[in-house]
Image (tube, rainbow, N blue to C red; front, side, top):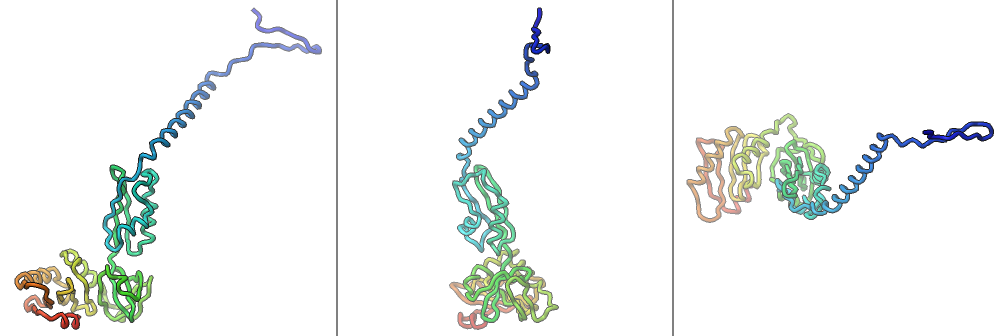
Length: 276
């Protein structure tokens, strides 16, 4: 059976036949592409439907003492009810870190069910006075901020430092004795922290390296002398205070710099403040 006919047009033969069917492989590719597109449309539609259901149900902020929870939330720029999947932990951490000059490190993590946890690690910040102004500084003695109002640094520990030659925000404090090892101040602070006393300490007098003292609760002046054997000295001080427990508020001066000859003295408020 013939499948074509021959025609002649101006003496040229033309063969007319049936058109070939597209290759099966091309059809399969086309069908696969259509299925993929339909699938994507379906997934996008599904996401648009369920994404609004993923909302932050709670925000936990921990480790902050210099900054309030409200301040950290404002720095983070997030709130309960925000879309969970839109949260960028690194971006939030960077934002908090950039605005919190007393913050050392920030970690942001997600927890079930739809809770954001923000962990703050603050710098060890102290402050001191010099020429009528107040300066906040960290463990490296780098000055972080200054103010004419002492209340601006009320959440920090006040430290009497050795004689200062120069002090400026953004730079390390310059002491008159440039060769002095200032590490004893960190040793004192850390030891008080390890013994659970730092939270009760309101003032450190570190102006004399070999005769440091701490003021606790605004009513106890504890003279420690050298920073050697600090834990033993603090244990002795605790024992003496327990033995001589007094009723009501009183002002006490306790010297344990010489552990063999400790002295205990009750003072009037006026004398206590005058000798501070």
